[in-house]
Every structure is written in structure tokens, then in C-alpha cells.
Image (cartoon, rainbow, N blue to C red; front, side, top):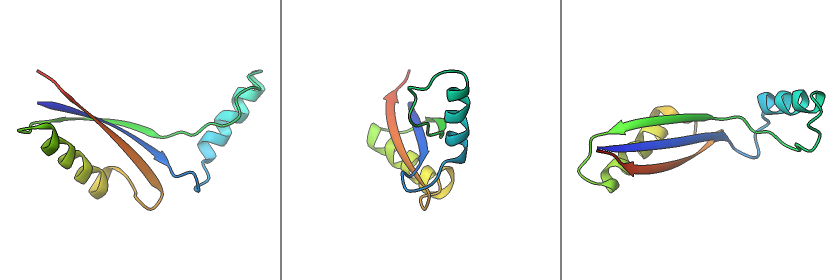
Length: 83
């Protein structure tokens, strides 16, 4: 059994209105040293696979087909073995 931890974020070239709103809110709270905020999503998948390569492949396909919009978003996958 493997766990895929996936971080999905908007590409740098895409405006992030939620991130901008969060940055402005932080500035209003006095946290003026925060210069940029990007908001994304975190996804975990528990995957039954023979090895890490198979688990990574399934996580990759899941992101490409459903979990991420590859036109606007980037994703990073981390695979760990679980018991």
C-alpha cells in the first residue's frame, strides 16, 4: 500500500484571486512582510500497487485525468510506502 500526497497549485502565469485576497487580508492584519500568497489544494490517495513506480503512475494519471487542470495548474506528487 502506498500513499500519494499531491499538491496542486495554479501556474505562475495564472492570476490567483484567492491568493491576492488572502495577501490583502494578511496586510490588513498587520502582516506586511508577506509579499505573495498562492492558494492551491492538497489531495491524498491511498493506492494498492505492487511497487512505487506503479503507485506514482496511477497518481500521475489520476491528476492528468481528473484531479488537476493541466492548462492552469501544476502538481507535485510524493509517494510513501505505508503498512
